[in-house]
Amino acid sequence: MSLNLEQHSEILDTWGKQLLTQHPWVECSERVSLFRVLPGEKWNLSCIPNSSIVWLIIDRDTIQSLPRSLSTKLLKTSIIIEEHREANSNLAISLFVFTLEHLENTLERVGRSEMETRWLLSGSSPISDRLQRHETLISKAKRVPTEGLERATRSLWHEINSIAQGLWTLAHATENNSLILSEFLINIIRLGCLIDYGCYPPVEELNTISKETSLGKRLANWFKDVEMAISKDSEANNRIIYSHPQVIEEIRNILNGIYRGQEWIDNPLANRMPVRIRS
Image 1: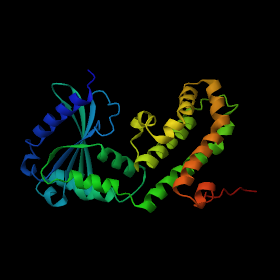
Image 2 (image 1 turned 90 degrees about the vertical axis):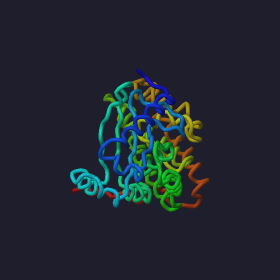
Image 3 (image 1 turned 135 degrees about the vertical axis):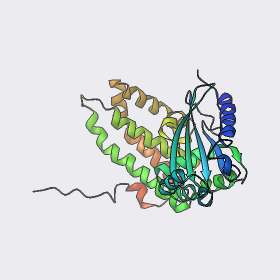
Image 4 (image 1 turned 60 degrees about the horizontal axis):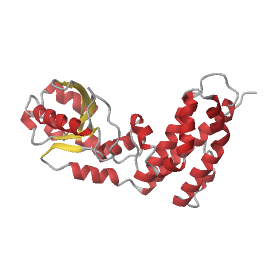
């Protein structure tokens, strides 16, 4: 049975509150925060049928009150993932248990997993949050340092141009090109999200959000060609290969409007690791 967003929310709220009445969480229920993360309400994207994610956040001091087998594991790994199933709806729930300190440290960085964490947190809703951490964490998620945001943008721009170097070789290739084309498209969508929102979603939500970004709207027809090419449409494949320089130029113009004068925009591969050829 597929559930809509409202049904997901109601079931997860009930499930989460029941979770906090059970061992071992009942003893520290007032000091843990429980967030409904996926599907996220803020972005109003397609929800994954019968699958959801809930975050339970606990500080390191409170961890000491948990059973030793659990506290030792959590202090060692910072994240524990448990799989649950809500009995009445048969909804699969992935419960992520974080230390508060781990989540705060994650929000200080700008790598791929950190950007996805920012996205998920920004679209989350509290199920139980006695210590009112939710708004504080969302504020931290939104405060991406300017230099960090530029570094993340530069990294994606480098990836896009690196993949573009090999697209010409696909013009007459007989093998399946879907992996390379998918990677090219995914990084462009991530960059579009980064420009508009300062973060980007996990890969399973990228296709939906691509149609919402400024870059996605400008490249909508090209995105359709990529999807057709991934489905082995040879004509679409050739259109992508021969039009991708225009796509690169379109993105370059956008980046110049944001980071005007930065050398990495015009020379994205300047710091690429040199290849040493044996004689």
